[in-house]
Length: 239
Image (tube, rainbow, N blue to C red; front, side):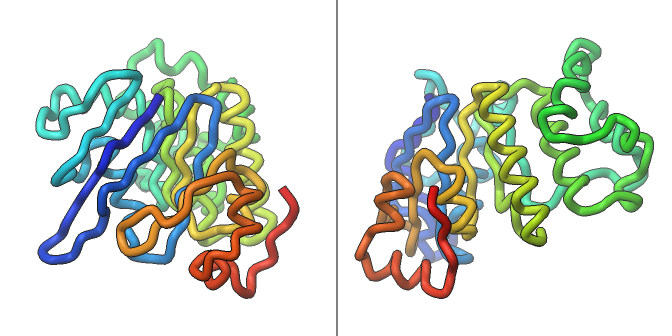
């Protein structure tokens, strides 16, 4: 289980996260929704220790993490793979070389399997990032994370910048990854439609606080003013 207890983070005089709690089991998908600047990405970076919290605790499988101990955080980052909003591939390396960068020999053995999960052809790996689409680069970044066999995957805005067809492909990729690997996924997003389609649970952040947590159905049917305002003008499909 991945668990956050009363996580609080402040930058200067601005409180970005205010006593945020979160619980996620493996094989579950949790969407964290909210407007830009409410702390969604900070939440992910706090989990893996890239941004240390001011107060609160992060627990992974019953063990409390220590963001001030960089050596111990290496193990945490192996358990929790962070997929950034931008693919963050090295332009001077082929896609294959990007995937293999920093890996040990035994970690490369699952490559073909993971390529199948994200519906990516092995033949494309000889190309450079600039030679493939943004969507393909994102798939490569997911495979790079999977090769380290995490127990939880943290997606930061996975559908940002994608057209509707590519967005559906990305959503299907997340479904496949969760089904095949039994990982738990935290997906930070403002994409309500994807949340309704994919999530087991939805959390809505506003001004650093959790203002809603529940099922997609409860979110969709809520009469809470902020949720109605957040959903306004968007087409929400049946789950």
